Length: 406
Image (cartoon, rainbow, N blue to C red; front, side, top):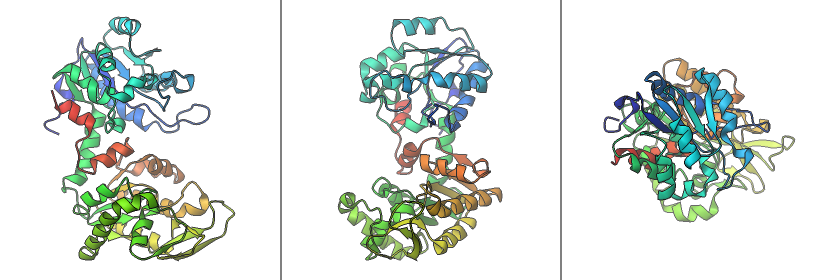
């Protein structure tokens, strides 16, 4: 962290901070925010600049409007919530570049905040476009990246825009916290035992992570659809369970290499022992519990079974540093949610006893809502699933690299 400039390196008095935030928050059918974590985590950065009598211009994206203006994807709905959190009026402008925007920014007084319209209303945002970056650069004196959730993206406001600010660019407090908390795992300085639990459906997006963390972890638990490719390559029968067959061919050698490492490090890599299987995702469908290596044709593994729950939770209870990304079952359906709920309860309970826990990824954080009172007990909730996973590959994110380079 010592070589990355943060907002503590600048005095914002009479300066306009152009802050790239990530207000791409989940909403329900009534456009009400269902998880405000990303907004709340951005508040300390904004407050620091307000305290120093700086001016603030906030830029963000929301959804995937694909370069077209759409009321559905307007950021205007953020204004009431943000104003309430900051206890001050937040101004809004229905564009993010152009003379009218520049005029509005020029009129800002010290201590005022202006939120601009969705960056993705311009297709150039996702194209690393120099001209779009230049137009945005006219709106601030100091560039601040506090959008960890998109800092793995090669987008204009993340990678190109900082170039126009020379040395007057930095990260905000949210970004700093994300980097510090992920480094508790990558630095190998976390309290042992260190346990990683990786779930979800796709092995292809996490295979590099497994390769990197297998030398960091004391325990690496693989659940959900992530487990089935390993089971299949190891000679097991997975029935009709989720397997990325088109991807397995490309990563088969890597999977075999990891399984060979398991033989040498028998206590590190662990798979479920049993699974809850069904022929469909319906709540009314029949279920069985079978060993994970013996799933019949026509049946799918949709949750970890009771022996696996006991096995995984026992390891988590003994851990001092815990990382979790990806549910271990189809938690949205009650028949297949017990495994994920049990993991949540155990991580929360272990954290209460003094362990450090980090949870990230949309599905993982969404599943926390199933178990009342557990979300508040987790040590840190990461605001970026994809960015967090890219960090675990031990790579410098493009958004961080753009701050380091002058």
